Amino acid sequence: MPARPAARARRATRLHPWRRGVHQERMETLFFVAAKLFWALAQPASWLVLALVAALVALFRGARRAALWWLSGATCAVVIVGLFPLGQPLLRPLETRFPTVPLIEDPAGIIVLGGGEDAVRSAATGRVELNEGAERLLAGLALARRHPEARLIFTGGSGRLGARGVSGATVAARLFAEFDVAPARVLLEGRSRNTAENARRTAALVPDPTAGPWVLVTSAFHMPRGLGAFCAAGWENLVPYPVDHRAAGPFGPEWDLAGHLAQLDTGLREWIGLLAYRATGRTDALLPDGC
Image (cartoon, rainbow, N blue to C red; front, side):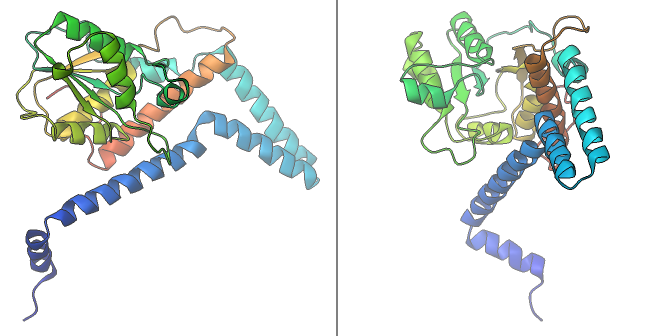
């Protein structure tokens, strides 16, 4: 009787254990590329561009009424987004989920997620260049000074499609050196492209990811997804340390088209990311409490 498919698969896995790693890398790459392409079309700025393109197409085809509808819709959207911080209701439940000043006692390590560095500009200028998420790195440095016995771990490669030779870990290493952090304390992971890879690749570098306590530093809006991904990757005793709050302040009319659009982009992207991670098993809960 021929072997059943499940039995053949088990034997193949035993004979060729490297296949698991190759398959996982391919699936991670597919997920990474699909996520980038999806967001390129799904972000609100793209909706406005598509509305303008649709209006032009309708105009050239002689459908003036349809063109007027598209232009009117795009104009109304620009005015509403410019006046109101629509991203706040999306970001606030994410940013207020964990204490801003958690109790930290004798941490084994401080894990800083990439995203606060600008690796492309750093490579171009030869200097440490940071972006609006710089508080991740600054908070990591402050915690490292406060807890001199803890390891300082940075995880982040490049989140850009087709990036070559540009790693956030390189920028972080330079910044840590400028702040006189002892090299023996620093652990760098520079291959990951997203949060799930941050968690998985960093877990492979530490002796025991279940030991801890591990202080997890990332932007407040990103903390639920970051914590969920690390828990799903086998980490335990994590202490969330949210920084870089984006939804602070009252909700009210104030003209800031660029700022409000960026805030809306961030909120939508994070909720879509949470749903995608939950659907693909990259987090065990949509809004985790800890592990």
